[in-house]
Image (cartoon, rainbow, N blue to C red; front, side):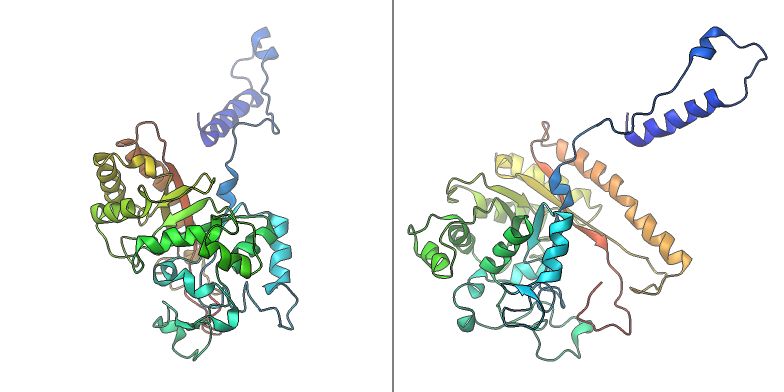
Length: 358
C-alpha cells in the first residue's frame, strides 16, 4: 500500500472509531478497538542521491555565483563563494551535476584544465538567449574557463558531495570522454593527463563515479532519434572505457517529461544489441511552470500558483509511467531512474539582472 493510501485509510478508520456510535449498544469488541500511529517507525529507505543538485554555466550561476575567484573581495574558499559553501554544507547535498545542461554538449573539458591564465575563452552556448542581449562581454556570454574540472571537483569535496559529470556527446568524440575520465581518475604518474592534474595541485585521483553520457539528446544535445542516440551511447561506453578501480556509473540521456516513446525505443534498441548492462541510470527531466498565467519570477497571482502546483504534481505520474516503460526491456529493473533536472522555471522578472536566473 502506498503511503498516501495508508494515511487516507488510517484517517478514515480513525474517524469511524472516534465518531458517535451507530447503535446505542456498545459491544465489548468496539470498546477494545484502537488505532496506533507510529510516527517514528521507518517505512522505507530514501536513496540519498535524491537530494542532489545541478549547476550549469548559465547566466550568473557559475561566475559571480559559485565562483568569485581567489582574488575577489567576496569572502571565498579557494575561489568558491564562502556563503554558498557554508550553506551547502548545512543541507548536505549528496550529488552535484555539472557543467550542464545544454551547455555540456558544447563544452570541451580540456579548455578548463591547466594554469587558469592560459585557458582559452570561449563563446557560451547560451549567448543568443534573448535575456542576454544587453549583457555585453561578460562570463555569462564569453566563458573564461576559470571554473573547470578541478575547480568543480574541489568544490564538491568542499561541500561533501559526489560529483556527477555531464559528457559532451553532440560536439566531441568519444575519445575526449575517455581522456576526461583519465584526467579525473587515473593514478598519479601514470598518464599525461594524470600529470596535468597533478601539476594543478591534485596529485591523487578524484575517483569520479557518476557520468552522464550526453544531455537532452532528443533536443539541444544532438536532436537524435532514440535509436540514433542509443548507437552514440554505445560508442561512448562500450569496451574502451578504463575503470581505474572505480565502479563507474553511466547515466543515459532520458526523455523530455512524458515522452514515453523515447524511453521505450532507446531501451528496445539497447536490448536488441545486448547492451543494457552498460546503462546504470536513465535520466528524466521535468520543469514546472505557471503555464500561460503570465507569472514571472516575482509576480504571481492565484492562478499562477495553482498552475505551478499542478505542473509539479505531474512528477509522480511521470516517474511511474517511465518506470513501467523501462520494464518492458528491463524486466528486473536493473537500470535506475535518475531525475537529474527538475524544478520551477519562471520568466526572469523585468527589474532583475538577466544573468540572475530563477
